[in-house]
Image (tube, rainbow, N blue to C red; front, side, top):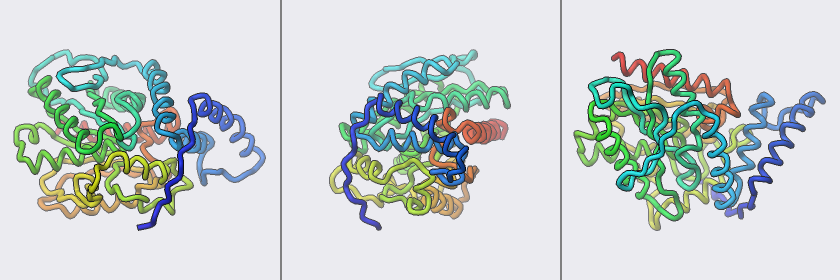
Length: 352
């Protein structure tokens, strides 16, 4: 394992980040017109701007990153057509995305999604990636005429709340949704750290033999899941020029999230080491140019070896960085392809 040095994070305000975005939109097209090579290799102008801007925004102090995320979440929430319903119920906090099902608590076989956001367990919120969630709902409705409601969990963040707080809250959220919709199957979905949390939940339900709740979870959708918490990710050296993830930020997030004495090879923390036998069907989306690519591929190989065999669908966006389906404003074409692939997976589940 390569030792990652501690590097102090700069404090970048919302104004700093927006000024850098204006700079990128001004300078990047001019550089291309003058014949300069892309700073993000082999990328479109929009992809280069997205990667460089997101990288700049997350290479930030915790306070700066959270302030920036809070402001942008408010803006993007106003841009989506979906109904957003905040929830605070018996300790469960989150947001319902989409209208109430017309049929209410009926016997429909159309699932409901429980979503866990990414952000290294220390930043982001239930609404950070609402444009991505809205895009998935749109693809489901437009292509398959499926009205899919999504519950996005507002889990506690590190360093104020360390592991296993988030795992406990995630299981409580599934219990809440199961009570709200007692006859509908549940699909778990998460990106990055949220994908890590999905896999920790599946292991916990299996280990604790929580048969009733485990049987309610019909599938898992993992978008660029964080499957090995060891820093740096295996593909960082090869892909860092293409991706916006920062190993220094990841290292800080890992230190904030893990309790003292935690074993980074614990399967609940690094699910690449998990026993995946008996898991529900899974869909995995990742980018061929992201820092997590090799780790995700190791996880996929482990999943293929699970016995009894599990149902596994994989969609690779070859030139994509991290979590492109969740960021349509920056990666519209790649995001849309991801939304369509996810919608096809859900439709296949419903028809089977």
